[in-house]
Length: 238
Image (tube, rainbow, N blue to C red):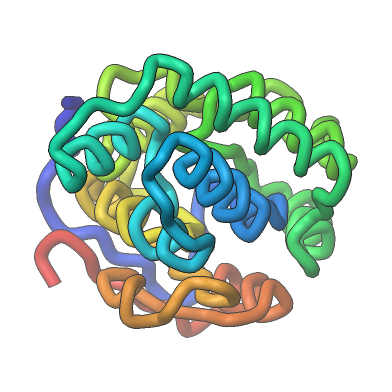
């Protein structure tokens, strides 16, 4: 697991973030309901019935490897080797039919472009799924090659590795980064990375994002949170 620098991070009046790091599913692309449906259908077909809502609470923001480990721990028996491939087939099918951008995300990206603020994606999803989702939602060109996924690190969220990798590749110290997350494990990973984090609670219960520096419910709120002159956030020592 990568380690983050220690010490306080403070964003003072008049400053804005050097780098904005987005989670993908549920933040950039509106895929969480599709992922929960796909997971429910996959686990139920394999003899481990869970509803989509139960899957959302248990697995949101997790890699498939972490999901496998949790299910096997709870059930006391191994999932079949076909689990990951079945899940990928189900989610790719649903994405191709139904995926849309998260409402308001294109406006947010327009604001970041206009201000010259760099941004990227650090997601628990596999790279093929990230690319397919961005292409399907018409957002791939917005991010170029500035996105990273599960295969790019040894430890996924809630470890900080993905966020630290994104910051390093983009050329920014963790203290100048702010993460936009909708999952509890993502909030934990951002805090472990020494970054500020804004919790997006459009679909996620706000209580699950309690570790975030601020919680918001609509993407239209985000530019104001990123750029308002009186923003002051203390993390890792507040």
